[in-house]
Image 1: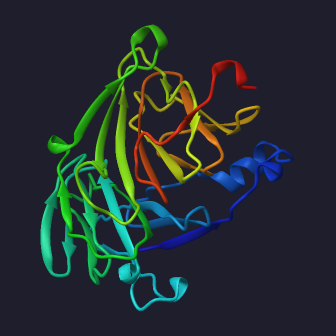
Image 2: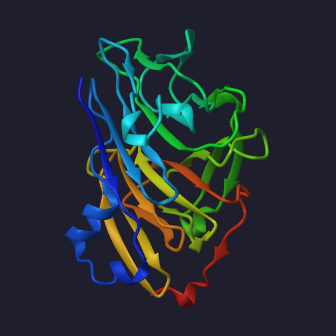
Image 3: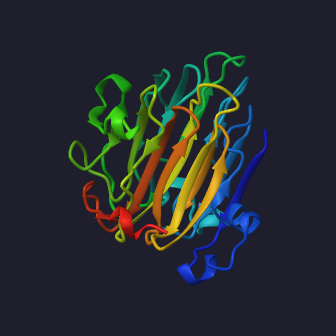
Length: 281
């Protein structure tokens, strides 16, 4: 089992104005999220979010972070959420086991000491996309089955952005310290997400693009200040960090899905500042 956690630092708009394509990719793109038998994480200084992939095969995997975070155990001062985009698996939370099927999620509270991830079939492993944020209070653990996720349909085919947003960890249905998390699926014939673009200065966001219809599909993720945009080409199961001052929208060569996660000082989902189309550059 390989465990790897990379660090990404915070940046100002003035910083990225001087970045070329390779530098943008180094600073904001997570090229590998899932690898069988491994835990691959990223620690971003943007609101101290940790995110990445846990892909167990023949043996359960446990995230062990203590010295790196200045704590006795990983979730001593953090909360965690995950969504599984792989095969069936299970989660062991302080000795209690719960089965997880494809697209199920979970909220795990601050103070949880044991958290072990397992797959039902090593040849079709679960792919747990995990996100952890600092926490100040303990809220109940909660299983979040895909069948129970809050659904919100947005967009239309005329604008090529018809999509369904599945809210898993959302302030309208449960309490958390700051973590929000969900899964968005674009319909066939749609390619744009989150357009018109917006920013939300009171929280940052990370996107993990997945479930492309074929391996040659690509998503162009657009970020940066509205009047000075940058772009990244993403392959399947790659992720990108968006600072709170940055727009975050994307367009694909066909339809796709993505998992979004947010944290910051405001949990109001609609707290955003929409950017008029004529201001984009």
